[in-house]
Image (cartoon, helix red, strand yellow):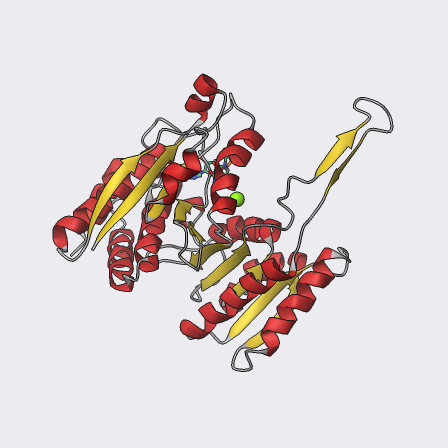
Length: 351
Ligand code: NAI
Ligand code: MG
């Protein structure tokens, strides 16, 4: 089949790592006649904002809607407030296309040493609620500059929203032979929304008697990720908690260069979007030294979403083959290979 991919390279290292991901997909297309792609690039980034005063055109979402999938780099530039780049580009895509699952594998690849004094396998997935929760634009502030200045930010949790993310987590667990789902909560302190979250999650959990349920407070989970990461299988978390846990998760498996993600619309009514967990990394942008593995891995997740688990595994095996040789390593791994050299090395291991 042919898949039409919308490519949004974004800012900073976004274009650098996305170029490598596209290169890998093109190499795969040459090796495997059963799959092909078209790539359509959209220049919607902070530069675009500075020229047009908006992150994307009025009909931007309509333009994206007909694609099979979106490959997203990263967004963020010192010249544009982060809340503009996030709320005018990433959030509208996630919300409009009902990408209510943020799927984030935490897996220590072969050849990667974890900073933890523990060589047990780390292989779990964080399923983060991606459409509501703490990342809402409801709230406000007043009395600017006065002693009584204040701000309020509301968290939104709905029965539908919590049910569907919990259902996804349990379905995913069942289909992938996981035996346990861990609920990340904070209902001891956040007494309205988090107790609600727990109650709905537990309603869903009760329907899956074949899968164990456990519930920990988010602060405790943060410690357990470091102390006994091998115990986790599927971690179900709200929008904010899942965001934080996934950067922590990346740190125990080699850093942000090894954290892929998918923003998934499980009904497939709209395109899903795949992007590395990391941001635009302005501190290393433009130097051709970013690690492209997270973005290449995200592209592999896209293929898995298309039903090509075989190609997902092929890409992952190629990445691991490069890592195990320890010849080509980007600076975040302690080496001096360039972004492009890493992409090339992975392509040489394909097929
Ligand atoms: P960041 O993820 O961009 O960078 C954090 C640190 O990790 C930096 O030291 C960076 O050099 C390093 N790093 C990240 N990715 C790397 C890679 N592939 N290879 C090697 N090193 C890597 O997060 P930060 O600095 O908090 O945010 C920078 C900008 O990115 C901000 O404007 C932020 O809003 C934006 N951002 C955008 C996201 C998105 O597009 N989805 C997600 C997170 C942040
Ligand atoms: Mg994040």
